[in-house]
Length: 98
Image (cartoon, rainbow, N blue to C red; front, side, top):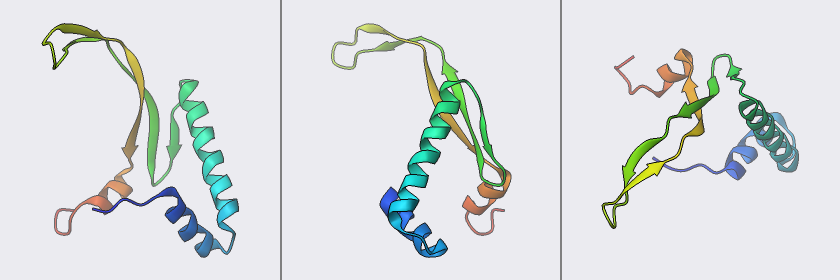
């Protein structure tokens, strides 16, 4: 599995739509910001055929410091969770498992 960077995606999209990478980078940055703002506000963001992002709470829990084996409290937090749509998830399945 390879890692693809934002710059590589921007170049691919720019070539596909005949625009500059600078413009596509601005669109990507604006999209990311809009998604983050909605998640911080507690809203789900749904892209039909792609997936959804939603804020998920994690309760506080007890953990251990691996160096001292001492119990520590891991505080409650929120994370951004992405769930792929059925259409997208089916594309991720290896051949023959669909």
